[in-house]
Image 1: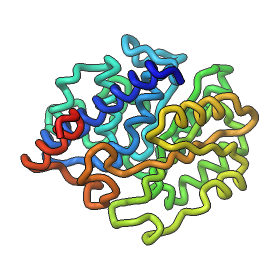
Image 2: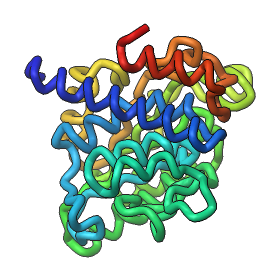
Image 3: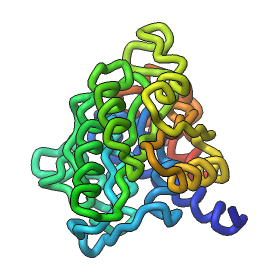
Image 4: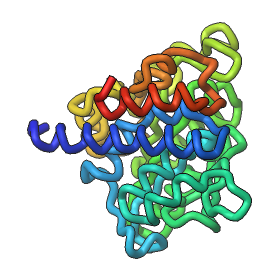
Length: 276
């Protein structure tokens, strides 16, 4: 990747993270940890040229789709959509407010740019499979992306979807497993170990790729390979850091589902702005 493009995307990812911290702080609740871990991947999808979308026509029939299967990471998706022009950035501070279109989990009927309502873990990747099959049946060439949590991957429905996608040869589907290693109750390996993910997806008939979620060159390489792979669905095992970008949140399961207090907010913003 060219240095200038990488710098631009890194700056966008930084702004996505700022939006995550600002919105969850304004709400007094939310899920910052697992939102921060996917900021770079979202920057690539929405700003790196990976997804074919039109903010001026969110319901465009031939658009690429993204399903945030780990729906609790909605602050990351909202921040990305706002920066991409789907709605005003100022709306982020209304997160989880009673009259806001930005609910705690994505709602496709309320928020421009949200392609599927999610929240019940495992259902998002299943819906993404249905979207991809629909494209095949309609002879459409749009692609479908699904971001799945590693803790979420303990759900049996994820593996039912994996079997379905392989059976129907959905090579227009790309799943991204956010492997940050932590879930609400602690380490994924302690709660219910999901390893080896590469061998499991390969056994289900998927093309398997891996990336460093915070290295945009690595992210680009993985998504390019997934796009070029034919005949079977693709999965990207995205190795990430929960809470990435905020020192006291990084690799800390306690930040799965809580917002910053005033002092923590100041520190987080200073770090994200490069002032700390």
